[in-house]
Image 1 (cartoon, rainbow, N blue to C red):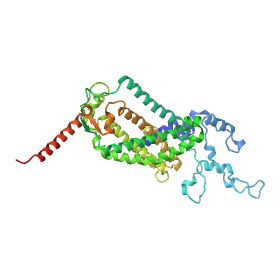
Image 2: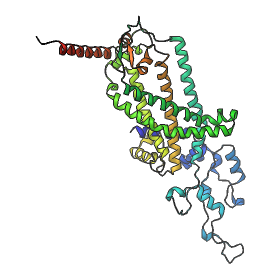
Image 3: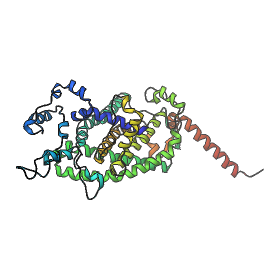
Image 4: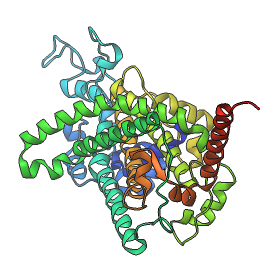
Length: 418
């Protein structure tokens, strides 16, 4: 269900961000003609033998809609002059008609190897992906990250660092074991590498190539691709480890409501009680698990596009449930070429990655400069008792009770029997 909702969201993004030609395919003929009088009367193409005219080319260059249905009228063998006649041909399909058939993936061709995948010689679905990648993805994704950083800077200037109330006790309590910290840092380091290499791949032509040259940018991006594809396995492994170790501590409970009601002590001076993970940390956890899992699945589809296609089957399920109709769309395409599958997977991969990067930036802030003593939890694994009591009082009391019980039992075992 989650993957279906994700695919529906991605379809909506392409519907609004895609080029005009993508919109034409979804319009009913009557509606399209009413909306565009120029299309109501088909231009006279007799002078070009039914091929596109200069006006068609100019309209396309101006970004105006062009009805491409006429280009689907391919030649027939019985329309050509006989081979014995003057200007006779071997058949009715000319080279332009053959290329138009290839253009619309309707050519009757065979390949010696590769199967149906290799039959797709050209497909214009990549143009919608390219325009989305060059436009909305870069612009809104970049603004999201810069806006997050700007907001955190402003918040820090207004709120300052969250300090420990009173003095530190000098006594520490174990917050995270070594294996927990190892999984966390593998996950964090791999995600940072994946984020940086992904951003270089997306923005390299804008901010690197113009200043240091295309050759350096090419070398940098080849290295980034190698790092991105291989570090991803460490990210997925650490994601599974973190989920297994912490899922039970991150299930919602009633204490989360009080944490939200008091804004977690981030705003104001109150510090609500919390268990090992407070409500804010639970939000981070489930964001990492769900969004990180989605990124991993789409990434695997990009690594193995022919073996792990995602969207054709997802669209089929969504069509059966009638989900496109909920937002006024027609049936979603279920016959997708591998190239189209990759375009959709790459777009979804990037969108979710931008959202998770913004969340992780906020997480890094609160775990470093935003809160005193927070880094120690993942640094050494030991936190001051004053910090533990202030931010995780329920968990701290349970740890102290357990430690006291173990100390009493050890003392009893050492004492001689009376």
